[in-house]
Length: 158
Image 1 (cartoon, one colour):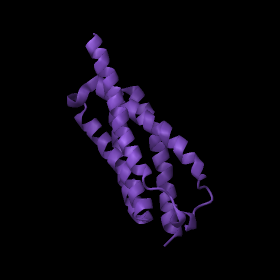
Image 2 (tube, rainbow, N blue to C red):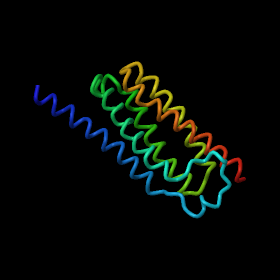
Image 3 (cartoon, rainbow, N blue to C red):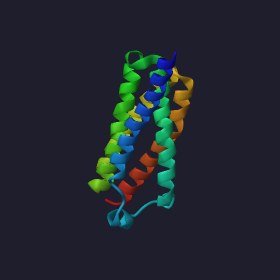
Image 4 (cartoon, helix red, strand yellow):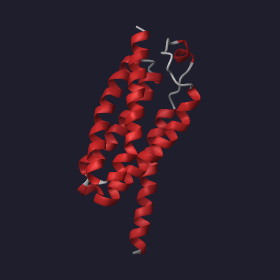
């Protein structure tokens, strides 16, 4: 029983670490003067909102993956956890494309793929663990909002 508990907690730490790697990678590409000069829609949130929102979302993402892993392990959740990892890579790449390459168009392609992959992940997570599915809903909502913002910026800055 003690070994099982240790495995569970190490699993949570592992999922937090995996998500943190993506978060740290993405955080290397920040808005700069290029972004400041772009025309943005009126409904663009202030920059100070993004850090706290992403922190909460990343923790929820890690906990969701951990719950699915805990219930089904990798063998029983290969597709769901595989898609989770794919969407995590797409999440991290968005910052590199949008901010690093200064390309709203490339960011838009990435976020569209992210949204599709994330939606599939949410559906699979709901089938495996109700709480895990619900933990990803705010993330899906935020990515939907971010996609609309990305599209608007791309359209406003030909």
